[in-house]
Image (tube, rainbow, N blue to C red; front, side):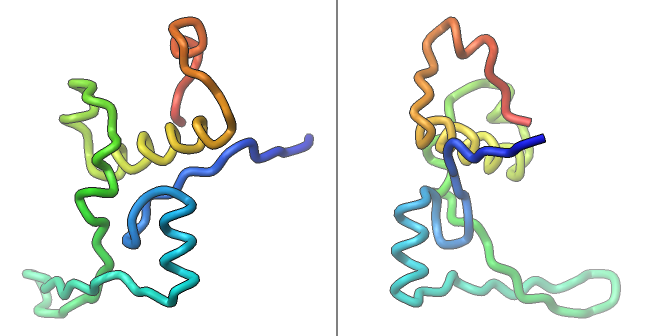
Length: 100
């Protein structure tokens, strides 16, 4: 079996899009750290949240609006990867395309 990467799409705490995130990494930027407290054992955790604008490119599909945040991240990153690979989503190819 051989594997080829045709395109990449990123949704990260530094934003979305390979070029934007890569440039922020090169400048040494770090995402904002949020502290979350556990209600069970009183421990605190530091997490890196994904900014809301990172998923602004999500298609306005009704099922996607009701889905979890991780599903929206996958959809945005998958569509960006298809665009990066040069795939044109016309009606014929869109019906045969899925994000898995």
